[in-house]
Length: 248
Image 1 (tube, rainbow, N blue to C red):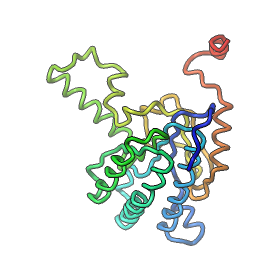
Image 2: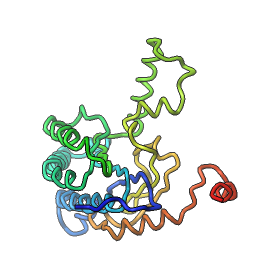
Image 3: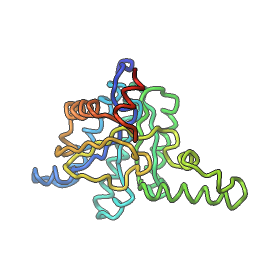
Image 4: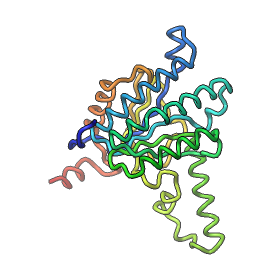
């Protein structure tokens, strides 16, 4: 059982692009499926480590809209691993007071996945600890397009005026309406891009890239990223002098 949250200066909302499962497996002479299975084990470790550190929101890029373009065999393997994880990790989430949410186009997911996913979301809805969000069949551009279309329909039907549309309204129509902006993004495996992930929510996020492949990403690697984050100065367009004055 994870103890109560401790005070911290770390991110309120941490997002992770879990990259490198396939390359990690290939380097070991193993099939990609082995990499994805090993990657799931890393998820368990990092989720519990984040909850222990008092991180309020953790969002994991589990499956993108572009991932549907991968070979069907690999997609099927990923879906099977996801279904297994949803069934096996419910008890752990309940024990650690973790609430599960999901974002993305769930209509594209296989019915058994959607049913299991929504079941866990419902069963953990009253948990008050960390909020774990799985981005599944998710794309940032699609999310913003969908939100824009919903707002346009309301304008068309006279429910709102064009001049009422602002950042706050757009944010309310995104998948992540219940989550704060991302403070820190971690991407593993050496790639240095955000790959259509939380485009709106990461406007002022700090970015941390590591060469470590996701299956090898441990609690120690997480701690290193959090230490790096705490050393950064987050100005949000202001000057250092303004920040110093505000804290006096």
